Length: 343
Image 1: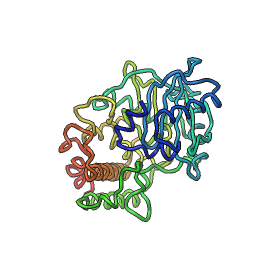
Image 2: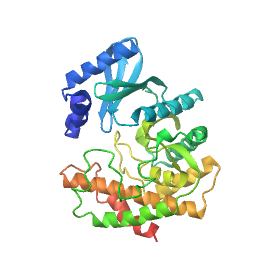
Image 3: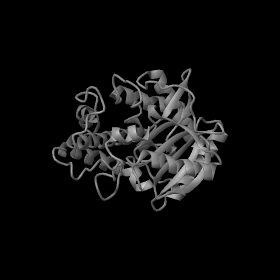
Image 4: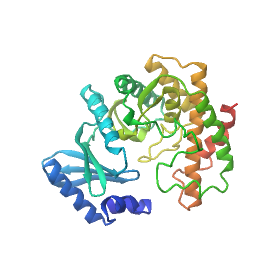
């Protein structure tokens, strides 16, 4: 599994940085010894593996427990952030919200820092272009936001990647090392121009109540049983930010699930509008016209960021991750809707 995932991404940089090796057998051995030391049981088998921002190992231990070991590069402030995330997860799980319980506090693993949580393997994937699935996702997000009101002051969580643009430059540091916006800038001026207008509007209109929200609330990160969400993932995407800007960021990609075949991955304008309306209904709060302006600007800025990532991949010769990049792409969304939403 480790070897296949690395080949699929065409790199071993993350694992090399964390484990000091890109060799799949050695990586599995290091993780296995970590489990024996800190969880008291050896690994029976791998359930899944993924690598991007983190090295993620889904494991079945010999005592029957299912666990997920997530390992990231060690950076300043990481331990405080991860502890804050685990506090939210523990609170949500104790209240019956479908998120995994933390099992091990942030712990050094080679040159990285690891956390462990229970493996949630309930439910099935669903396509969020379906309005009932969309409504369930919006409702569950509204519930999560409501349950996390007490954590708004937890500054260790930090701001969302795209809903709080950097004050001194157009783009934040990309979420993945493979994207180099400076090197891959040729031909992207039209994207940057629209992003600059959207960014200025998000900054100028910044307002609305502060909330704690899962800022990468995508269909890929939830599982369903009878239209109800029964499992959720990627809780290290928790962030504190202004609600309108966060909802705009979340709305730009909530339909995407790279783990299933989708006729379309990105949301249409109608999907996005419907998600915002569903969230309003579930939360019992109506956004003001000023909030709506911020939501739209945040959505445009987020899809512009996605278009820049697509542009960087294309410039590097990597294939598009959609069957029809001419229509189903962030660049297409930006070209079709960006100018009108920024009027």
